[in-house]
Image (tube, rainbow, N blue to C red; front, side):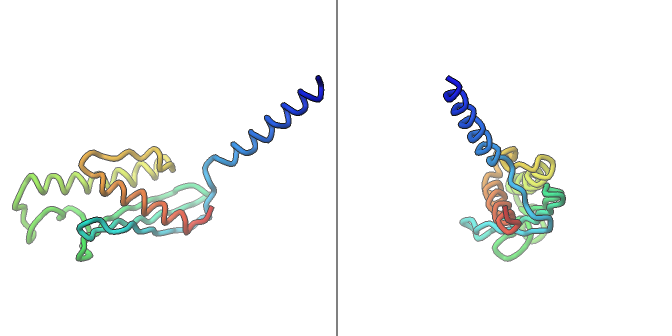
Length: 140
């Protein structure tokens, strides 16, 4: 009977060690950039992730239009003017969502805790892809 307990204990310890390795990966300290692929309009996302003490210390996310123009407070305007309030509002929703994605990731350090914002799912997908590319550079 002691042999059975010893075997069970050994299996339990092995399982715990294996599961312990499934936690958050440690990354090298530094500043890393990552870029997403282009969407159907040619726009892409880019993050800059700062890691300090093997934790996410900062994260910045910008998406770029096909012509290299950043999607910012002017995104959704035509020739510097709001020609369609509805289009501008939707564009600015995406800009606010981009800021929220980076902020949530900075605060939690966990991509699984970054939720997509309705109306800004393309930016969400670009954010996730760009962060993963940056973390790949940071090593695991």
